[in-house]
Length: 314
Image (cartoon, rainbow, N blue to C red; front, side, top):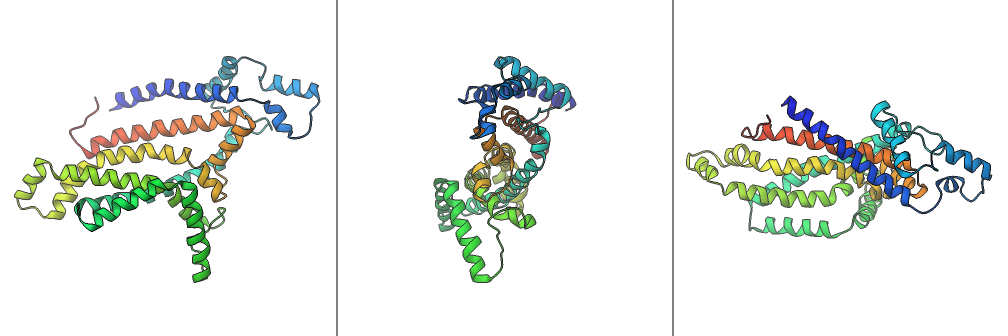
């Protein structure tokens, strides 16, 4: 097991370098001058522009700029500084916490609602409840996140407050603690809930058709034990894979949700940094997201051995 983990971590290094180099090249290729964007409508003195470009290595070739960045990350844990001379790690710290809270809230909604509805649909396959759940998930997949966000803001955030007089679901900011993440967390998880519901239903239906399920039933085991201990446990492997990979997707895809609900997270910061061509910030955010993907997938792989003892890592 230990050798497997070390091997996976070593394999992560070229993945990290490839992803950061790709995003670095994309940002490098964007039109416009980041120093001019930093000044806004004002025109900077040419001497100041030259000093700033030299200070941030903007006159150097792409690969040399990338070497300065990646060597700082790998050897010193330094993500560089913004063009406003703010350490990138300091800029990301608080914003990543907001996005992580949002992503974890969405992941909880996704796991509880998605697996629950999928289990319910699988046990009632072909009935009205199954048809209703499949139709609802198709509708949820078809509606864009932007529309879902504004509709829920209006119905649950504004109208419900008018009817009850209680602000149950805040619609903007993070001033209400955990409740601030409930509505945006559900909006962010909406599409994933639909996919996970369908995946759970399909996986469990296929598992319940297996020979060992029929054998367990023939032995006289109760329906709850057959489904819970034998069926659901084996059906969880594709679900765990989906949830592990989706954590990174939720964090990286929070731009729209954070904008709708005015959350000062990393998604909105990424959008602003791309617009201003802040290479260190953009690549720093992508680097951390790649690391989250790698760690999440490693944890998922290790959980396979827990869910299915036949899986072993040598």
